[in-house]
Length: 299
Image: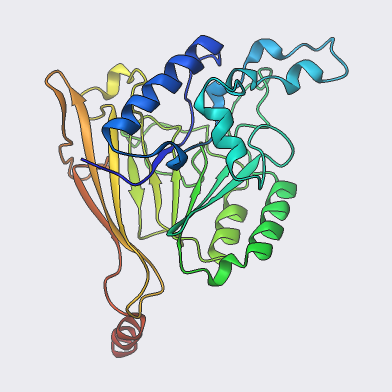
């Protein structure tokens, strides 16, 4: 199994301790080696567990301590600082909390949806800040992304689409604020895929959303006991066929593996459940003109 890129949508650590970040960095290097991914093609965004809550002190009116909540990820000895500084087009830890990475065949925009969370919040969920979206839009316009034919992926930690929980009666309080505005912006610039983490089980919606949205689930976090028969730790290979041949959108296949007592095995299918099994396709293979003709006939 090989890959061209390795994308990590947050919660690299549990409590943002420097030792955790170092262990994670070493583990990710081993994974990238196993997948033949070169270091420059490893990308990540922080999650809600990647900010150190101990840096929050209400007696510090300057805010200096809180501004260092991502310090564990900024050491030159681990990969995360290098990833953040590689593009030079933003910063995941300060300012507008986004970054962009440009490759020959791929564009990835990453956003720190956890940047506004505070340890004092009763309900901790992600936020898409309007000012950050405006700054993103300006950057997209400068880069002329609307007509760029490369595959465009947006990566954040929190989910912006209300997927069903493994059991329909469960409530979800961690849906990111202002997700609709983000989807509208990405649709305006013809993004192809939204990738996120946060929820500990994988989901894909490629029908009800303007852009396919894929939740990667969890690679190694402990799974809630009530989900154990249906949910497992997973990793995924996303194969994408780029635009072209009369198509304005990508098509692709997600292959998923689950961690079992026997090791990593092809993920099982769960009918009538949102969890992604071993093979899940998305996108359209028809040319846009053919789709338009079929729709016209139906009308």
